[in-house]
Length: 288
Image (tube, one colour):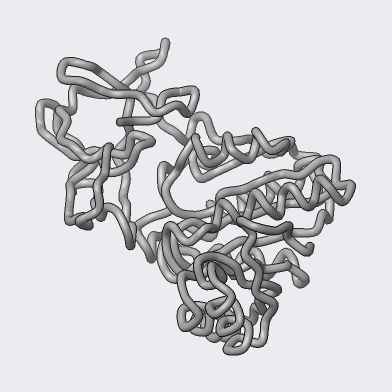
């Protein structure tokens, strides 16, 4: 099962051809894989590492069911009319030379791991911003693995524009410690913050350790001193650890959400341990 160009999940069967890109993935929940040394070789078998069509060598995966994971054969590159090999960088979002930071407030959603409700929190914040009179909101999925489905969800909720790492030339922001990520993230922030909007919602995929999230947070901190941070955490202890780690980065959390607020007991424990308001956003609006 792969994402189609519409974001819909579609079945790929033996004999089908599809466009893909070599890429790295370091998921804490799904799949770990990488681009083989020397690149892909025509006629060789590789693994689908993500629904969006990221291909590479499989290092390992979790016991969870994964509908995209399977072996495929690499046939070759795609070339343009000038016979030059096409690359994601050729389709990266361009920054207007006269563009300037609009100064819109930034709301940042981070998590303690994958699948802890970051996108649920992001859409809840989004709805609240629109409900409070923000007409134009821009969304950025800053880190992790690209997903057309996720950024289209923000467009469905009314985003004037939604970006992810593909818009800046990368299929994922892995591997951690990758050279040149500060330049990629600064470019992403240049484009996002200069987009005509009165609020910006940024989601970091995965957790706050991997995917070069610390580098992104440092880039963002230099641009905005008053970012409102919403943390999605699996449990109260994870929320407490994230608070400490972000504090060491010079960042403070405005609110905690996610499975750590699923029951009154968990919600009270999380709020007591962290000293931060805790709210289950799947049941209530975001107090932004």
